[in-house]
Image 1 (spheres, rainbow, N blue to C red):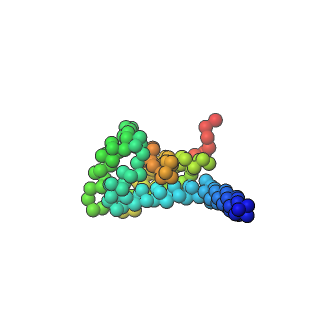
Image 2: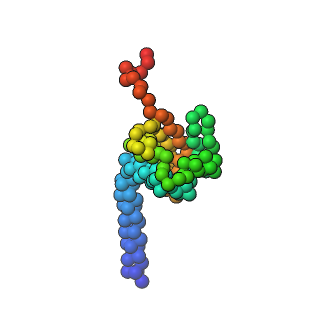
Image 3: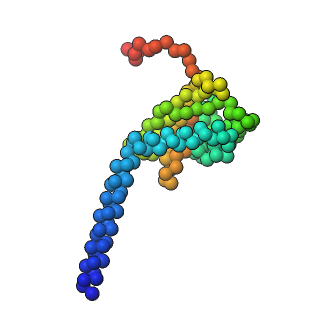
Length: 162
């Protein structure tokens, strides 16, 4: 009986050690750069909903309390944003597309930013988007803020103001 208890104890310790090692290893694989890459892939999937003309899938990426900016006005809430964006999904061709060229996350991995160009159907760059994402307890990313702006011919900056 004593040998059986010792084997059980060793097995329990080994399970604990291997489990902790797995957590450490998983943690090393989930640093900010890895999580940012995951967020970038999420933004790409979000953009694909427009290309696929899938407004239902689009709404799955929205946080319940999301805020989208449409010029000077704010569109607040998942239902309101989905309704405001519904016309963009009408017709066989997307009226615009976007792709992230930047993705960054907090060290906690709970909040992130994506940004990148917006294109007209002919491929002309017409703007830039900026989206703030929050990671939920289930690991999924949801857009909490989104703002686009048109491209401009801004003169080069000479640096920050004095």
